View 1 (cartoon, one colour):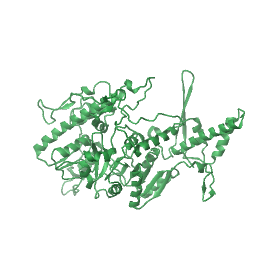
View 2: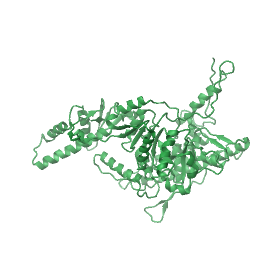
View 3: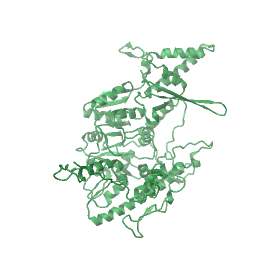
View 4: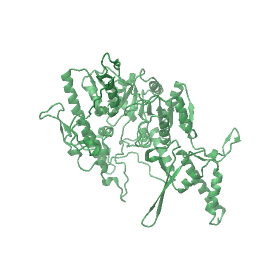
Length: 628
């Protein structure tokens, strides 16, 4: 067989920037996707965060109460001149035109506006796009969860108190300008593409529409194309961007290769339906069990083989305000979590929006969350269009629809500020397990959906792939994710058992022996010393331990310790030294050079030593550096 290879070019318009420059001139190309990416760069400093731009745009028109001027409001201003206008399909005076003037000058992400600093000149708003709405959250488990987690973080800071975030976070001036630009480029994208598709629908008389390319990830645009232009069906693959090129190349090799002619070799049968989005590896129960056993000292694991029993446990957890990581089957190809690598929560609890953004996802609070909805209930909760023939219009979370007015207060955690929602329709035939869990939640609560976001908790981390990735990401959530459901395993974080460590725990009336703290594996230390002008020395010590379950290769896996004392304790934890031995040694060292004048002073020294030691041992345990 002779295979004929030929290059396939992605660029369809001229690149105006020398290819040696950043991104090979992509941002200066006159295409709607490139212009949208240019706005993303101007706002966030990253051309590939277009999803953030789409999520920012609906904040245009929202009014925040001005705390400094009663009766006045804070809102973003509309930019009058369009960035994109004209017709892509014309070459006359009405042809497509681009005006980049709104995206010139200092990028928003680099601005140092006065409102980012306090009166002492200290930057207090490093996350300049961190804001949320003006609505109070009363009697909500989600808000309680934020406060509960803040208390945990204060303890993490070695007892140093810190100010909790205020109830409502107002936008900075840079954020208001970013909203203006995001709304403008989103409006221009929609009007330009809607005009283009409407024109060619008339030219071709086609009744169905298929979208591909990075712009097809814009679910707001996709929703309008689906509802407003009269197509019977609109199909968007789960991987319309660059990640789908692999599928396209596969299809091209199978069906467009001239060598696969009749008589020479049998041509493969054409795909009768779109490829499944679940194209990742299939991990076995043995592989899952192996990774669970590797992290066993830090986990509570229960094997629950009955689906209904597992669904009941999950429903009880999220109904009470908990957050679940759901790991099932093959992983998704494409940017959306579709119920195989997902973080799930209760869509009724608005306070969870800030909690999930800040504590779980570690991102800006303005960003919305999506629902996974039972297919048979979609039109009861969402405006899907009068002429819609197919309720399963968004199986890959590629369409945005408006939540019905009467339902918005019922599902505030998945209703964006403008009333919209980027939903995933879940059909029983396609996803029986996920559909079964959502149905169980529906039966319990009367709400036929769950909040669904991608399972990743570390900055810059993609959606988890392997069981090892899932356990690491779950543990790195530091308790913000309450439960990991991996196959038939229901997993929780194990609390540090201080009583067992001290030999104060009993079982059936029998006192159990004390356990000895042990390092999770070999450790590398690195200390850096900084000298100030007044000869003050600041020491930063960090460690690297590849064998610990929470080891992250980003930054080569280094973990910063609180102080030298924490580093010394880590070195002592060999598995053969008890806590009482450690306390005795440090007590003798701390009193060797001074006379303890009274029993009260002696008690103060012992209490301080015990508190500092136990706090650091617990912290080392929670970060999987030691176990006992």
